[in-house]
Amino acid sequence: MIASVKEMAEQIMMKSNNIPQEASIMLRNIENVSFLNHFIASNLNCETKDKQQLLEENDFIKRTENLLRLLQIELQHVELKNKITNKTKGELDKQQKEYFLNQQLKAIKDELGGDSNEREIKDLQKRAETKKWSKAAKENFTKGIEKLERMHPTTPDYSVTYNHLDLLLDLPWEEYTEDIYDLKRARKILDHDHYGMDKIKDRILEYLAVLKLKGDMKSPILCFFGPPGIGKTSLGKSIANAIGRKYVRFSLGGLHDESELRGHRKTYIGAMPGRVIQSLRKCQSSNPVFILDEIDKIGKDFRGDPSSALLEILDPEQNHTFYDNYLELEYDLSKVLFIATANNLNEIQPALRDRLEIIDLSGYAVEEKTEIAKRHLIPKQKEAHGLKDYSIKIANPVLTKLIQEYTRESGVRELDRQLASVMRNIAMQAAMDESLKSFDVTEESIVDILGNPGTPMKFMPVKIHREWPLV
Image 1 (cartoon, one colour):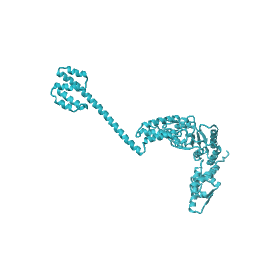
Image 2 (cartoon, rainbow, N blue to C red):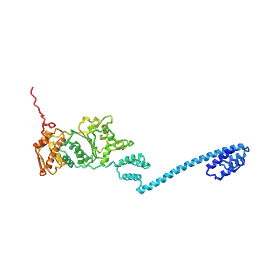
Image 3 (cartoon, rainbow, N blue to C red):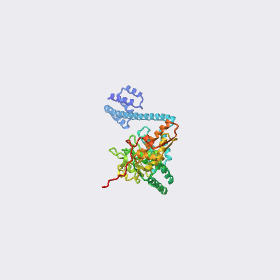
Image 4 (cartoon, rainbow, N blue to C red):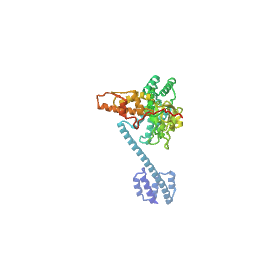
């Protein structure tokens, strides 16, 4: 028992930082066991009543047992104290190490020009000071900035939050281009860019007239319907120039994923806003002329049905609260002038067709094609083939022969290709003989350049009226 008391007392002395090392030497030199008990008991960190009990106990064995019990308790206290002290010391050492490293990192960043994270946040806040946007967008931005300040730049969510805030700042929330309400100027521009098409021009001028008188109007959703090559898409650009708006073109041909229109949830890897929001971000205007090209050629299969996603975008009663999945906010599209183009109305979903104001564009007559060729196609092909400084004369009968015998179409694309063939032949002649500065295209030269109209792939005039024998 005395050996146990000595061993336990030495363990306490070794583990306790408050007892000097000389005490253990002194402990080994005590030979009187009774004195040893009293010496150890007097130096124990226990309550006075426990020490009093040891003094009152005359039986040496019982007193030693009680002393062993108190020593055991003291040893446990010392071990627990050491454990807590070592743990706290480890945490403090780690914190001190991190603090020291962070201070060094900060000093290096200051030397290089400041903390990039702080610079990015300050740059976002500075851009937000002059931004005109809705109350909901401003609140969303403020929350995003607070979240960004709490995040470390190396975390994956940091870039997601930063890109979302950058989109909020780039979008033209309440930025509009000013419409030009000069109807005579608009008519002049439309007439200069496109020959004919009086019905469409009148519709655009009506829209402008109402805007001029009322000051505000929900933009109609127009749909230009007609055969290929009659200038439906280019007419949209002409309308944008006439009323002084930005021009955006979005081809819907073959689109099969509605996320292209509505965007992806920003939690996905590689998430992006929809093409509508992206286009507005690019053109920096909330009231552009938005061309939805080939709306009848949207894909519809097991991968998705984008035409159903277009229902909200193309409804004047709903599109003032258009919701993009990436933006996670409502955006006002009611000021956007949407113009759709289509070749076949039967391919458009009935619910979508109901939202469109269909304007039928029939094909051009021969006289109209002749005028279009003289005004637009011939000057364009001359410039495209380096013949701008040359005099090229193509008489109306020659153009009529070219239209009737070498093309069969509602539009003018094939006519444009045939004129390009003629211009290439003239360019070859001009390159071979530099003295030639003027060219006269005749019906005979048309046959020489393009071949006989009776050959395959060329077209003979169709006899429209047929005399039926009387029965």
